[in-house]
Image 1 (cartoon, rainbow, N blue to C red):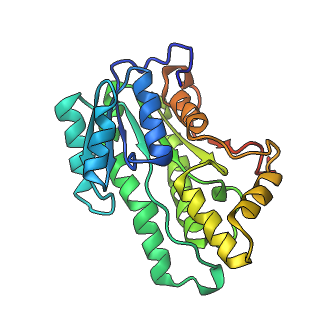
Image 2: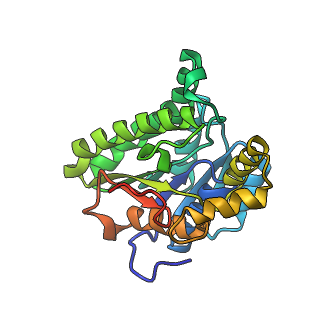
Length: 261
């Protein structure tokens, strides 16, 4: 899906972790369609290389973001193949479901280790160059739980909210340098991750997966799940030259699901 505007992404270098499937892969494909050179990261090495091979100018890198060396691996691959990183997409897997009354300090530390620290390491690696060149786009794939905490996802709610606080603070500090920092919050997008959550809800409630999905759709004004391509288009716009005056924002892509302002 191309945006039909001059995004200014042609020849830019983008890094997209968590790009073997779901939202990350959709974003990598969308950026590539706009002419960006894309480094795809993922734990499934063979798969991430296969997906990269399908794109015009891309390389796939096997990395586990929880490994502190992953930052050097991803950024190094970008610089080796294409040049300095212009667009950084923050994306990775989510923690398992759980309830707040059982949430332990150890689980909170795990959530931060998964959802905050890897992304901060990536930001710190590419930010100085972005500021020096006067252009940079940092776009985080978050969750609607940042604005409206989701039942039984306490680790995700807590970790992603911490990341959101860090990024909002960062946005104010680097805006004058031509670097924008935003977060896109998906609602129920038709990905494998949402499928896992739907199955867990079905098992817990004794309902069929189809009943769970229909109930979820009924709570969405659009009456459907979104597609990864629809979500990726929002990320791509925020990564574009056209979005140069949009920063520090949490943009929802949820079909109207979250009712807060």
